[in-house]
Image (tube, rainbow, N blue to C red):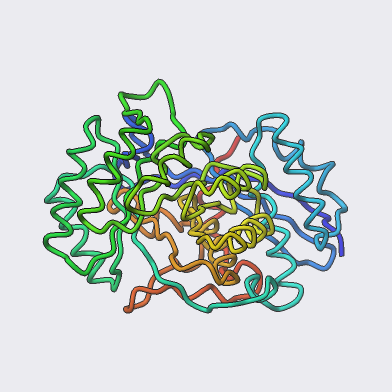
Length: 376
Protein backbone atom coordinates (compact mmCIF):
# COMPACT_ATOMS: atom_id res chain seq x y z
CA UNK A 1 0.00 0.00 0.00
CA UNK A 2 1.37 3.41 -1.02
CA UNK A 3 0.35 7.08 -0.88
CA UNK A 4 -0.69 8.12 -4.38
CA UNK A 5 -2.59 11.36 -3.80
CA UNK A 6 -1.97 14.33 -1.50
CA UNK A 7 -4.40 17.19 -1.01
CA UNK A 8 -3.98 20.10 1.38
CA UNK A 9 -6.74 22.65 1.88
CA UNK A 10 -7.29 25.70 4.01
CA UNK A 11 -10.72 25.54 5.63
CA UNK A 12 -12.37 28.59 7.14
CA UNK A 13 -15.49 28.51 9.30
CA UNK A 14 -16.94 31.96 10.18
CA UNK A 15 -17.69 32.11 13.90
CA UNK A 16 -21.18 33.05 15.02
CA UNK A 17 -19.68 35.80 17.18
CA UNK A 18 -16.08 36.92 17.69
CA UNK A 19 -14.11 34.74 20.09
CA UNK A 20 -11.51 36.37 22.34
CA UNK A 21 -8.94 33.72 23.29
CA UNK A 22 -7.29 34.50 26.60
CA UNK A 23 -3.92 33.38 25.22
CA UNK A 24 -4.10 36.08 22.47
CA UNK A 25 -5.03 39.22 24.40
CA UNK A 26 -6.52 41.88 22.16
CA UNK A 27 -7.21 39.53 19.25
CA UNK A 28 -10.83 39.09 18.13
CA UNK A 29 -10.94 35.71 16.36
CA UNK A 30 -13.69 35.76 13.74
CA UNK A 31 -13.09 32.40 12.04
CA UNK A 32 -11.82 28.91 12.79
CA UNK A 33 -9.13 28.11 10.20
CA UNK A 34 -7.71 24.64 9.68
CA UNK A 35 -5.14 23.07 7.39
CA UNK A 36 -6.77 19.80 6.28
CA UNK A 37 -4.46 17.20 4.76
CA UNK A 38 -5.96 14.28 2.85
CA UNK A 39 -3.77 11.33 1.90
CA UNK A 40 -5.11 8.63 -0.42
CA UNK A 41 -3.59 5.21 -0.99
CA UNK A 42 -3.51 3.01 -4.08
CA UNK A 43 -6.20 0.92 -2.33
CA UNK A 44 -8.55 3.91 -2.17
CA UNK A 45 -8.20 4.49 1.59
CA UNK A 46 -8.21 8.13 2.70
CA UNK A 47 -6.50 9.41 5.82
CA UNK A 48 -7.08 12.86 7.26
CA UNK A 49 -5.01 15.21 9.37
CA UNK A 50 -5.79 18.70 10.65
CA UNK A 51 -3.43 21.41 11.78
CA UNK A 52 -3.96 24.87 13.23
CA UNK A 53 -4.05 27.73 10.71
CA UNK A 54 -3.80 31.37 11.69
CA UNK A 55 -4.12 32.82 8.20
CA UNK A 56 -2.66 31.65 4.88
CA UNK A 57 0.76 30.70 6.20
CA UNK A 58 0.33 27.20 4.74
CA UNK A 59 0.53 28.32 1.12
CA UNK A 60 3.04 26.15 -0.67
CA UNK A 61 2.96 23.44 2.00
CA UNK A 62 1.39 20.86 -0.32
CA UNK A 63 4.27 21.22 -2.79
CA UNK A 64 6.76 20.99 0.06
CA UNK A 65 5.20 17.78 1.37
CA UNK A 66 4.70 16.11 -2.00
CA UNK A 67 8.23 14.68 -2.53
CA UNK A 68 8.42 13.49 1.09
CA UNK A 69 5.03 11.76 1.26
CA UNK A 70 4.17 10.60 -2.28
CA UNK A 71 4.75 6.88 -2.74
CA UNK A 72 5.37 6.33 0.96
CA UNK A 73 4.18 3.22 2.79
CA UNK A 74 1.64 4.57 5.29
CA UNK A 75 2.53 1.83 7.76
CA UNK A 76 6.01 3.35 8.27
CA UNK A 77 5.01 5.91 10.88
CA UNK A 78 8.47 6.25 12.41
CA UNK A 79 9.68 7.61 9.07
CA UNK A 80 6.97 10.27 9.16
CA UNK A 81 8.16 11.31 12.61
CA UNK A 82 11.66 11.78 11.22
CA UNK A 83 10.26 13.97 8.43
CA UNK A 84 8.34 16.12 10.90
CA UNK A 85 11.39 16.38 13.13
CA UNK A 86 13.44 17.57 10.17
CA UNK A 87 10.85 20.27 9.46
CA UNK A 88 11.55 21.88 12.84
CA UNK A 89 14.86 23.01 11.31
CA UNK A 90 12.75 25.31 9.13
CA UNK A 91 10.73 26.47 12.11
CA UNK A 92 7.72 24.39 11.07
CA UNK A 93 5.56 22.26 13.36
CA UNK A 94 4.32 19.52 11.05
CA UNK A 95 3.76 16.85 13.69
CA UNK A 96 0.03 16.97 12.96
CA UNK A 97 0.43 15.36 9.51
CA UNK A 98 1.28 12.05 11.21
CA UNK A 99 -2.33 11.45 12.30
CA UNK A 100 -3.34 10.93 8.65
CA UNK A 101 -1.10 7.87 8.51
CA UNK A 102 -2.72 6.40 11.61
CA UNK A 103 -6.12 7.14 10.10
CA UNK A 104 -5.14 5.05 7.06
CA UNK A 105 -3.67 2.26 9.19
CA UNK A 106 -6.80 2.01 11.33
CA UNK A 107 -9.09 1.99 8.29
CA UNK A 108 -6.95 -0.63 6.56
CA UNK A 109 -7.14 -2.89 9.63
CA UNK A 110 -10.74 -2.06 10.56
CA UNK A 111 -9.87 -0.78 14.05
CA UNK A 112 -9.82 2.55 15.87
CA UNK A 113 -6.28 3.70 16.60
CA UNK A 114 -6.46 3.35 20.39
CA UNK A 115 -6.92 -0.41 20.05
CA UNK A 116 -3.91 -0.63 17.74
CA UNK A 117 -1.87 1.25 20.36
CA UNK A 118 -2.70 -1.37 22.99
CA UNK A 119 -6.10 -0.24 24.21
CA UNK A 120 -6.98 0.48 27.81
CA UNK A 121 -10.17 2.48 28.25
CA UNK A 122 -13.24 3.04 26.09
CA UNK A 123 -14.39 6.22 27.85
CA UNK A 124 -12.75 8.99 29.81
CA UNK A 125 -13.83 11.81 32.13
CA UNK A 126 -14.28 15.23 30.57
CA UNK A 127 -13.38 18.65 31.82
CA UNK A 128 -14.89 21.61 29.99
CA UNK A 129 -12.08 23.88 28.86
CA UNK A 130 -12.91 27.58 28.73
CA UNK A 131 -11.17 29.92 26.33
CA UNK A 132 -12.04 33.45 27.36
CA UNK A 133 -11.83 35.65 30.42
CA UNK A 134 -15.34 36.10 31.76
CA UNK A 135 -16.97 37.96 34.63
CA UNK A 136 -18.07 36.02 37.70
CA UNK A 137 -21.72 36.07 36.66
CA UNK A 138 -20.96 35.01 33.08
CA UNK A 139 -18.79 32.15 34.27
CA UNK A 140 -21.42 30.92 36.71
CA UNK A 141 -23.94 30.86 33.85
CA UNK A 142 -21.45 28.77 31.87
CA UNK A 143 -20.98 26.33 34.75
CA UNK A 144 -24.74 25.84 34.96
CA UNK A 145 -24.79 25.10 31.23
CA UNK A 146 -22.04 22.48 31.28
CA UNK A 147 -23.49 20.81 34.35
CA UNK A 148 -26.74 20.43 32.42
CA UNK A 149 -24.62 18.59 29.82
CA UNK A 150 -23.39 16.20 32.53
CA UNK A 151 -19.92 17.74 32.91
CA UNK A 152 -18.62 18.08 36.47
CA UNK A 153 -15.17 19.58 35.85
CA UNK A 154 -14.01 22.88 34.37
CA UNK A 155 -10.76 24.62 33.47
CA UNK A 156 -10.77 28.37 34.10
CA UNK A 157 -8.39 30.78 32.38
CA UNK A 158 -6.16 33.16 34.36
CA UNK A 159 -4.81 35.95 32.16
CA UNK A 160 -5.91 39.23 33.73
CA UNK A 161 -3.16 41.72 34.53
CA UNK A 162 -3.96 41.13 38.19
CA UNK A 163 -4.46 37.41 38.81
CA UNK A 164 -6.60 38.21 41.86
CA UNK A 165 -9.36 39.28 39.48
CA UNK A 166 -9.39 35.78 38.01
CA UNK A 167 -9.24 34.24 41.47
CA UNK A 168 -12.66 35.77 42.18
CA UNK A 169 -14.11 33.51 39.48
CA UNK A 170 -12.63 30.40 41.09
CA UNK A 171 -13.89 31.51 44.48
CA UNK A 172 -17.43 31.99 43.16
CA UNK A 173 -17.49 28.65 41.32
CA UNK A 174 -16.22 26.77 44.37
CA UNK A 175 -18.74 28.50 46.65
CA UNK A 176 -21.74 27.70 44.44
CA UNK A 177 -20.55 24.27 43.25
CA UNK A 178 -18.58 22.58 46.05
CA UNK A 179 -18.48 19.28 44.13
CA UNK A 180 -16.99 20.80 40.95
CA UNK A 181 -13.48 19.76 39.90
CA UNK A 182 -11.62 22.94 38.96
CA UNK A 183 -8.43 23.33 36.95
CA UNK A 184 -6.70 26.66 36.23
CA UNK A 185 -4.73 27.55 33.09
CA UNK A 186 -2.44 30.59 33.10
CA UNK A 187 -1.24 30.21 29.47
CA UNK A 188 2.26 31.45 30.29
CA UNK A 189 3.95 28.67 28.34
CA UNK A 190 4.21 30.73 25.15
CA UNK A 191 3.54 34.39 24.56
CA UNK A 192 2.22 36.22 21.51
CA UNK A 193 3.63 39.73 21.27
CA UNK A 194 2.08 42.73 19.58
CA UNK A 195 -1.61 42.00 20.14
CA UNK A 196 -2.48 43.48 23.51
CA UNK A 197 -1.40 43.89 27.10
CA UNK A 198 -0.70 40.56 28.78
CA UNK A 199 0.62 39.45 32.17
CA UNK A 200 3.94 37.65 32.60
CA UNK A 201 4.45 35.60 35.74
CA UNK A 202 7.74 34.83 37.43
CA UNK A 203 8.40 31.99 39.85
CA UNK A 204 7.32 33.82 43.02
CA UNK A 205 4.09 34.94 41.38
CA UNK A 206 3.31 31.41 40.19
CA UNK A 207 3.90 30.09 43.71
CA UNK A 208 1.69 32.81 45.19
CA UNK A 209 -1.12 31.85 42.79
CA UNK A 210 -0.70 28.14 43.55
CA UNK A 211 -0.97 28.79 47.27
CA UNK A 212 -4.10 30.89 46.76
CA UNK A 213 -5.68 28.19 44.58
CA UNK A 214 -5.01 25.51 47.17
CA UNK A 215 -7.67 27.08 49.38
CA UNK A 216 -10.22 26.19 46.69
CA UNK A 217 -8.92 22.64 46.11
CA UNK A 218 -7.92 23.29 42.51
CA UNK A 219 -6.92 20.07 40.72
CA UNK A 220 -3.91 21.61 38.93
CA UNK A 221 -2.29 24.88 37.87
CA UNK A 222 -1.39 24.78 34.20
CA UNK A 223 1.38 26.64 32.34
CA UNK A 224 2.32 29.14 35.05
CA UNK A 225 5.81 29.57 33.51
CA UNK A 226 7.52 29.56 30.12
CA UNK A 227 7.53 26.18 28.37
CA UNK A 228 11.33 25.91 28.53
CA UNK A 229 11.78 27.07 32.12
CA UNK A 230 12.40 23.53 33.37
CA UNK A 231 14.35 24.67 36.41
CA UNK A 232 11.66 27.18 37.32
CA UNK A 233 9.06 24.44 37.10
CA UNK A 234 11.20 22.18 39.31
CA UNK A 235 11.45 24.82 42.03
CA UNK A 236 7.76 25.65 41.75
CA UNK A 237 6.66 22.03 42.02
CA UNK A 238 8.87 21.52 45.08
CA UNK A 239 6.98 24.23 46.92
CA UNK A 240 3.50 24.36 45.38
CA UNK A 241 0.65 22.86 47.44
CA UNK A 242 -1.26 21.79 44.30
CA UNK A 243 -0.20 19.78 41.22
CA UNK A 244 1.54 21.60 38.36
CA UNK A 245 0.80 20.85 34.69
CA UNK A 246 2.37 21.94 31.39
CA UNK A 247 3.60 20.77 28.00
CA UNK A 248 1.08 21.73 25.31
CA UNK A 249 3.63 23.77 23.36
CA UNK A 250 6.61 21.53 24.05
CA UNK A 251 7.64 19.08 21.37
CA UNK A 252 9.61 15.90 20.78
CA UNK A 253 10.90 13.52 23.41
CA UNK A 254 13.80 15.55 24.77
CA UNK A 255 11.68 18.47 26.00
CA UNK A 256 9.37 16.17 27.96
CA UNK A 257 12.39 14.24 29.20
CA UNK A 258 13.61 17.45 30.85
CA UNK A 259 10.38 17.79 32.80
CA UNK A 260 10.60 14.17 33.96
CA UNK A 261 14.25 13.91 34.96
CA UNK A 262 13.93 17.19 36.90
CA UNK A 263 10.68 16.02 38.55
CA UNK A 264 9.27 19.37 37.42
CA UNK A 265 5.62 18.47 36.69
CA UNK A 266 2.80 16.36 38.06
CA UNK A 267 0.81 16.31 34.79
CA UNK A 268 2.29 16.33 31.29
CA UNK A 269 0.12 17.77 28.52
CA UNK A 270 1.45 16.90 25.06
CA UNK A 271 -0.78 17.43 22.04
CA UNK A 272 -0.83 15.11 19.02
CA UNK A 273 -1.06 18.16 16.73
CA UNK A 274 1.70 20.18 18.39
CA UNK A 275 4.08 17.90 20.28
CA UNK A 276 4.99 15.06 17.95
CA UNK A 277 2.03 13.10 16.60
CA UNK A 278 0.12 10.09 17.91
CA UNK A 279 3.07 7.73 18.25
CA UNK A 280 5.21 10.41 19.92
CA UNK A 281 2.53 11.23 22.48
CA UNK A 282 2.17 7.52 23.25
CA UNK A 283 5.93 7.42 23.86
CA UNK A 284 5.72 10.49 26.10
CA UNK A 285 2.89 8.83 28.02
CA UNK A 286 5.09 5.76 28.52
CA UNK A 287 7.94 7.91 29.80
CA UNK A 288 5.55 9.66 32.17
CA UNK A 289 4.19 6.34 33.41
CA UNK A 290 7.72 5.22 34.27
CA UNK A 291 8.04 8.32 36.48
CA UNK A 292 4.58 7.78 38.01
CA UNK A 293 3.22 10.90 36.30
CA UNK A 294 -0.13 11.58 34.69
CA UNK A 295 -0.77 12.85 31.19
CA UNK A 296 -3.72 15.02 30.16
CA UNK A 297 -3.26 15.91 26.48
CA UNK A 298 -4.02 19.40 25.26
CA UNK A 299 -6.77 19.30 22.61
CA UNK A 300 -7.63 22.90 21.75
CA UNK A 301 -7.12 22.69 17.97
CA UNK A 302 -10.06 21.23 16.00
CA UNK A 303 -12.55 18.38 16.16
CA UNK A 304 -10.14 16.10 14.31
CA UNK A 305 -7.33 17.10 16.65
CA UNK A 306 -9.56 16.27 19.60
CA UNK A 307 -10.39 12.89 18.05
CA UNK A 308 -6.71 12.07 17.46
CA UNK A 309 -5.79 12.96 21.04
CA UNK A 310 -8.69 10.89 22.35
CA UNK A 311 -7.29 7.88 20.51
CA UNK A 312 -4.05 8.21 22.48
CA UNK A 313 -5.95 8.74 25.72
CA UNK A 314 -7.81 5.51 25.10
CA UNK A 315 -4.50 3.62 25.15
CA UNK A 316 -2.90 5.20 28.24
CA UNK A 317 -3.45 3.92 31.79
CA UNK A 318 -2.01 7.15 33.22
CA UNK A 319 -4.60 9.42 31.58
CA UNK A 320 -7.61 10.37 33.72
CA UNK A 321 -8.98 13.52 32.07
CA UNK A 322 -9.94 14.62 28.55
CA UNK A 323 -9.92 18.33 27.71
CA UNK A 324 -13.20 19.36 26.04
CA UNK A 325 -12.79 22.79 24.39
CA UNK A 326 -16.09 24.60 24.66
CA UNK A 327 -16.78 28.33 24.99
CA UNK A 328 -20.08 29.31 23.37
CA UNK A 329 -21.27 31.27 21.55
CA UNK A 330 -17.96 31.88 19.76
CA UNK A 331 -16.45 28.42 20.24
CA UNK A 332 -19.38 26.02 20.30
CA UNK A 333 -19.47 22.41 19.08
CA UNK A 334 -20.22 23.46 15.49
CA UNK A 335 -17.32 25.91 15.40
CA UNK A 336 -14.89 23.34 16.80
CA UNK A 337 -16.05 20.32 14.78
CA UNK A 338 -17.40 22.02 11.66
CA UNK A 339 -15.92 19.57 9.14
CA UNK A 340 -16.90 16.40 11.00
CA UNK A 341 -20.11 14.53 10.18
CA UNK A 342 -21.07 14.57 13.88
CA UNK A 343 -19.68 16.70 16.72
CA UNK A 344 -17.92 14.99 19.59
CA UNK A 345 -20.08 15.16 22.71
CA UNK A 346 -19.86 14.01 26.33
CA UNK A 347 -22.48 11.65 27.72
CA UNK A 348 -24.86 12.48 30.56
CA UNK A 349 -22.32 11.18 33.08
CA UNK A 350 -19.61 13.60 31.96
CA UNK A 351 -17.54 11.08 29.99
CA UNK A 352 -16.48 10.92 26.34
CA UNK A 353 -16.56 7.57 24.63
CA UNK A 354 -13.36 7.15 22.61
CA UNK A 355 -14.46 7.46 18.94
CA UNK A 356 -14.81 3.92 17.62
CA UNK A 357 -14.92 4.13 13.83
CA UNK A 358 -11.80 2.67 12.17
CA UNK A 359 -8.85 5.05 12.13
CA UNK A 360 -9.20 8.29 14.07
CA UNK A 361 -12.72 7.21 14.97
CA UNK A 362 -14.67 10.04 13.36
CA UNK A 363 -16.10 10.70 9.89
CA UNK A 364 -15.02 13.73 7.87
CA UNK A 365 -17.91 15.46 6.09
CA UNK A 366 -16.70 15.90 2.51
CA UNK A 367 -19.51 18.32 1.71
CA UNK A 368 -18.49 20.52 4.62
CA UNK A 369 -14.87 20.34 3.47
CA UNK A 370 -15.86 21.59 0.02
CA UNK A 371 -18.13 24.29 1.45
CA UNK A 372 -15.52 25.74 3.80
CA UNK A 373 -12.48 25.43 1.50
CA UNK A 374 -10.80 28.77 0.90
CA UNK A 375 -10.07 29.18 -2.80
CA UNK A 376 -6.73 30.64 -3.89
